[in-house]
Amino acid sequence: MDQVVVQRVVEELRSVLIGRFFGKIFQLGPLSFAFDFGLRGDFLLASVDPGSPRLYLIHRRLRDLEKQSIPLASFGQALRSKLGGGHLVNVSKDPLDRIVRLTFRLDNDGIVFRRLVVQLTGRTANLFLLDELNRVLAVLREQPQFALHETYKPPPRPQKGPPELLRLGSESPSAQLDVYFSALDKAKQFDARAKDVRSRLTKSIRQQRTLRENLQQDLVRHGDPEEHKRIGDLLLANVATAVRDGDKVRIIDYYADGAPTIEIEVDQNESLQDEAAKRFRQYSKAKTAAEEIASRLTQIDREIVELERRLQQLDTIVQSRDEATLESFEKPAAAPRVPAKKSRKPEKLTGVRRYLSTDGYEILVGRAAKDNDNLTFRIAQPNDLWMHAGDYPGSHVVVRNPTRKEIPQRTVIEAAQLAGRFSQASDDAKVVVHYTERKFLSKPKGAAPGRVRLSRFRSITVEPKESVSRL
Image 1 (spheres, one colour):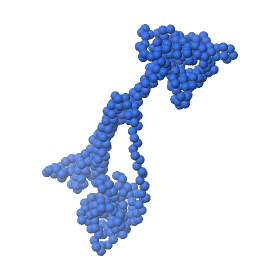
Image 2: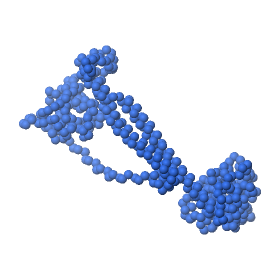
Image 3: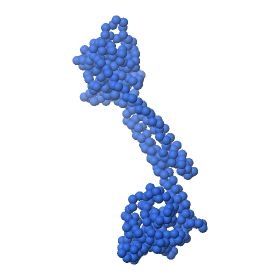
C-alpha cells in the first residue's frame, strides 16, 4: 500500500468508524487481526506482515472469522484489556509516511486516551498500543529499538518512496484492496502448496535413487551365487582327495577343462564338509538376494519413472495455475480396499515331527512305518522334496515346497541331517541320504508299510543330527 492508497483508506475509515466502540478481536495469524466495530459484517483488517502490510475494511461472516481465528497472543490480550469499551474518536495518517493512528477514548474513572498505531512500512511494519503521552504500552513485533514505556518514534523513512502497487478506482478503496490482496494471498498459497508438493516429490526421487544404489552395493557384497555353489560341490567331491596345508586346500576342479588343481582358503579348524555347508549357505543367501534385489530394483525403477512423471505433471499445473487440479494432485484417490482373507486354521498332522529350516521351510519327519506311508502318499505334494537315509531303515522326511521354487541348499542339508538322525545310522559319523521330488515316488504293489520305489534321485553325505528348531 502506497501513500495515496493509505490516505484513501483513512478517509473511508473516518467516515464509517468514528464514534463506534471497539469490540471483539479476531487474531487471524501471528501478524494479522480483524477488529469488530459493530458494522454488521464489516470488520477492520490490520496485517503487518512485512511482505504485504495492509489496513482496510473487509466483509466477512462472523462464523467464518471465528473459524479462521487463533487464540489471542499477548498483544491481542493487551488490546482487549486496554481498548475494551473505548470508542474511536479519530483516524489519522502521518504526513509523508504510511503510518495510521487510531485514537480511542475510554471513560473509566476519568477520561483516558489511547492509540493503536499501524505501521504499514514494509520491513518495519508493526502494531503498537500507546498511552495518551505516546508511550509504548505493547508492541506486536518486538524489536530492539522499541522498549515499553518509552516514547514511540516512527521508523526512519526510506530515501525513495515505495512503488505504487495499484491504482484505485472511484469505488470503496477497502473493497478494491480486499479483492487485490485476496488474489495476492491466493496466488501465494498456490505457490506455497506447489513448492511443498515439489519438495516432497524430489525428496522421494532422491530417496529411491539412494535405495537403488544401496541395493546394488548389497548385491555385489553377496557375490556370485553360482560360484558359491560350485566351490561347495567341489569341496564335497574332493573330501577324500583334498590336500590341506594350513588354511590352504588344493582340490581338483572337475568343472574346468582338463580338471586342473585349484587352491582355496579354508579355516584349518573347519572340516571340508562344514566349509561346503558354509558355501551352500552363501549360495542360498546370494541366490535369494539376487532374486529379491532384482525384483526390488525393477519396482524402484518403476517408482522413479512415476515420480518423475508426476513432477512433469506438476510443472504443467503450475504453469496453468489450476487450483482444482493441484488440490486433486496433492490428494490422489485412495486405493480400493481389498477385503482381508480369512486365515486358514492350522493344519493338524498326526504321526509326524515338524521342524522349521533356517530358510523358513517346514520339514516333516515320519514316526512309524505307517506314518511314513501317510506322510509320503497323503500329506506330501508332488513338488515337495522327499528324503530317506540310504541303505538304512528310518523315517521318511518331507520338505514342503508351496512356492515350487528351488529349495535352498542349506535347507536340503538340514533336512538330510534329520533323515540321518531318525534312521538306524544315527550314531554314524556320516550317512548317505537319497532325495528326490515326491512325484518320482511310487508304492510297489503289496509292499510293506514304509517301502517305496524311486524312479530318480540324488544323494548327499551329511552328519546325522537335529540342527534346526522343532515346532
